[in-house]
Length: 282
Length: 215
Image 1 (tube, rainbow over the protein chains, first blue to last red):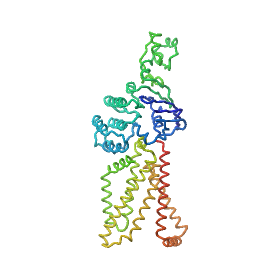
Image 2: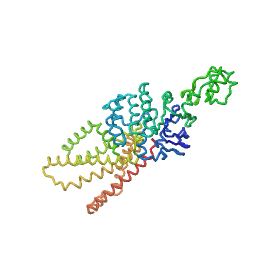
Image 3: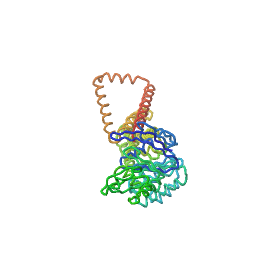
């Protein structure tokens, strides 16, 4: 569905250099700190920026050459941009109906009511949460085969986030070939939703793993100086000095649980993965 | 493209109060100002209003989102030119009606046929202005494009002044007399061809500007 091969994009003081493969029917998460390159990656996939070298393809077509028909198959939710703030929901409904042959008017109207989005208020007067919900809804109402969502749940409270995540799950259930690429800072959203995770740091993919594997097999060993000195380093991905000794990130939690029953081992979620692999764990 | 038209027309209708105010002002000016002022004022207003939809697209990284919709840069540019031409033409029609109504009340007898060439001559001027304004706004954005346009029109004024100084008023008058002797149809066709060429060049430049935009 999406393929990035050795894609390089250089800005003044930043270089993105990544490869990714996202097959159809998957929900893939893209995580990383601010400025890691998540939004640039999404823009490359959408053909909004051209790579300096390498190849970005969607549906087998070069991203910059996506046809109108192919674009109709993509639903996009970008952080902090969307339809003009001067329009209201009724306006957007009419525009989408003209833009997308597969636009589902009834679904759009029903969801607007469920999400409590006022029809006649201009977007400028919406709350941050309402704007975020509308952005997601706009991406999901034309039976797109591919959803690309950049921070779709940012600024939403827990209830609204769950509503959005449920919408995304239902969206996938309707058609097994549908694919979602989602970037988010909220790890719990990704842990409950994604099949696999790409971790991007300083413009490079530093880890790609199935979410189940991360949750089952990754963990943080908390060891003192003496334990660290004798610790088998085979499956330690990263170690970091702490006040009590060392925090060691592993992708073989069970191996260490069996071999070192005295060591404290914590669950390795996506937050821990980001922090340990990018050097910010405390 | 239908979706883009829908979006722009709805954006324009959001400024209903301003549109009504401009139209009221046009009616007042049409009846109070002597001469052809209204024939230039109203189409220019229609043109700037339709071009202003580009500013809405520009705000809050709007281009980035728009280009994720099922359109390409060429369609976007084409829609802007068509919208602008339509807006200019509709307001020109309105201006022509106002012009004749006010003239009828003022002079009671008017030979419409005598005025047609002068009335039509406003259209190519508007298209030429559009051919400069759209690519400028796409390239530099709403704020900077005002400065750029000011510079462009300033340079044009200076060049015209210098042209007059270098060539001399007498020679220019002589050239104008020669032009008057040329067949009206030849002049008409030449103007139309020139305007079409300018609009086509402008369109190509606008497409290049949009294609090279990093969103």
